[in-house]
Amino acid sequence: MFVGELVVKSRSEVAIVGGSMAGLFTAIALKSRGFKVHIFERSTGALTNGGAGIATHDQLYDALRTAGIELRDEMGVPSKGRLMLNQKGHITHTRDMAQTMTSWGLIYRFLRAQIDEENYHSDHNLISIKSNSNSIVAAFSNGYSVEADWLIGADGSQSQVRKIVAPDVNPIYAGYLGWRGLIDERLISPKVLEQIALQVSFGMAPGGHWLGYLVAGPKDELTSGDRWYNWGWYRTADAEELSDYLTDESGKYYEGGIPRHLIRKDVINKMRKESIDHLAPQIQEIIAATRAPFLQPMYDFFSERLIFDRAILVGDAAFTARPHVGMGVSKAADDGASLAQALGSSETSALPEWERERLKYGAAVVNWGRDLGSYLGPQSEDPDAQAKAAHYITPEVLLSVTAASDPSQYL
Image 1 (cartoon, rainbow, N blue to C red):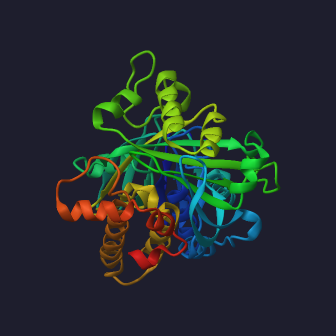
Image 2: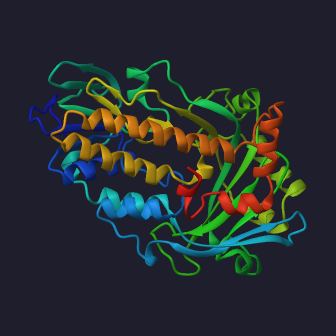
């Protein structure tokens, strides 16, 4: 606990706002280079399974190794490839692609264990930042403040740090949302589970595709019968529909995302009805077994700057890419590792060079996500845009490029 104020005056002190993936990766990278780091997270207590499932790739493995974590076989569920189910439940397309399907919670817990309790501060909601020539001061709604040499904004797509330093930069709604679910695999019939267990399964429907795969269970279990099944379904929805979906029974609107227990039953029932109308019986069974599906509006944006005096943006606070690329975690890790190297360098050009490189890379990831989601949301009348959408909606392409095992080839 702090007593009124935590004052940091060593040149190597860094305050990180945001205690999720980007914040943890950045903290670990800075620690490895001798920096003293404090993390300030707005949530109370341990974070939950945000994002649920993660399809791995070489960039993620490299990022984890840099953070001192070797992603072993027992840290995920193996997947041999991908398959497409049509509305009747028949497999129409397949694609070999060996991957380990891990979970957000599993990686989070490995990272969190590397940060000492006295350096991780929950229930700290940022309200203001003030920079001077030698330090930066952050104040929180609980009355505490911190002074450090650098402040890192690693607080996600709805970043409070970014809202303060760049108030005109806001995520852009992509015109569609994602229904998400995470359920005990035992809720799926053995016949269906046998068919999809070692695959990433897809289904096509008007307005967006469905996909699902097995991940580690609630206590990171990987044995059959103890795992979770993670799924998502992208659905086109204009701004008016989104506003309705994010409004609870009392009429309260949740701009940043509605808590799952407050999603109206009529909205959930509409989604279930659409699954019966358009998706395979196997998928209908999985959706029906999900008692508490949740909503994720799709946004993207990229910053034109990452450095604002002594405040620096990383992860989704700097660039928010659509989840189709499957690179949110590895990009956050790369941001943190490369930033730690730049801050630890004696070269005066290191930090500006870091910003130029990360701006270029972040823009490439966001644009790739837009390409993959080009057939979702409102459709352009431009012939080139229509041709792009027609390309990415084909099952062969969808199975090959979504959260691909080697995304670098597309950037």
